[in-house]
Length: 302
Ligand code: CDT
Image 1 (spheres, rainbow, N blue to C red):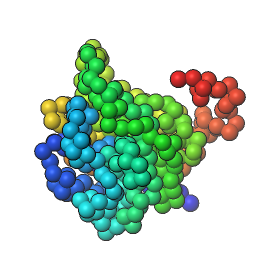
Image 2: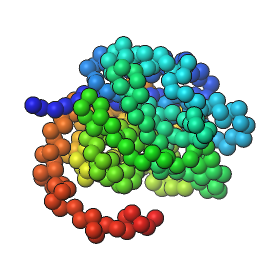
Image 3: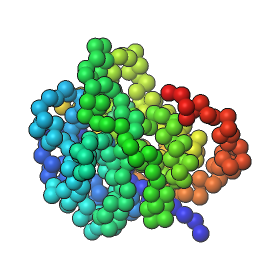
Image 4: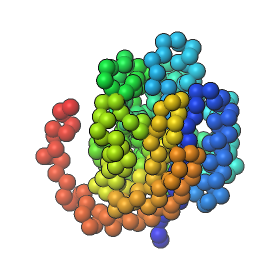
């Protein structure tokens, strides 16, 4: 029997610092409703989808920092999104700033939520970019001030019989992300991102930003024979232009669907999961051809 899953990428426009959580959650619910109406069975939202991308600022005030974090998911202000998932029978992956319940550690996190509105699984961003203090000549990007590196590995979860992994923004640029998820059995990789349109450190590469957005995701999909669905937070957010280009990529490396705006937008594609086996047969019969005995440096050397 043919296997497929209809995927929605829910891109958002900017979420300004002045936006209150209920207003933002309203936008996410509206996107989820559109996705469900289009027949999607799972949706992915951006990285840090509940707030502005606050690591663009150096903040010292504890209360101000904490206001960006979720101490519980769902919480009183996000419960409506989970209720919408259960009402519409559509699961979702949502990026947010997590304040860990047990030890108060802070992570850049994405949760996978089922069609019943209950948590299926959690991923914490492994490749945390930027620095903890502003560095001269580079765009201020202080994720390392606010987040610890993820400590949950690259888990894969079963959603409606389909094996789903997650990755967050900078993770998408690293081949190890896709390979680890692939080796863990992923068939679909859901990604959320917030990517500045321009970087102070590389003004001459301005024209390559969208190419460098899609290139690693297309390569990751092709070389690991997985579907990739990636949701941007796009547009001018608190004065900083964020790239759009949200997309759904097939295991052939082809972009099957792509957002056209820099605003709230839903794109949907029915992912043919049988294509994975076809692509494996063409080039990537891992069990037959991979040579892990020759790859030791990949695990041992930074
Ligand atoms: N959010 C995130 O990971 N953004 C990074 C930009 C890093 S610039 C220091 C990205 O790879 O898009």
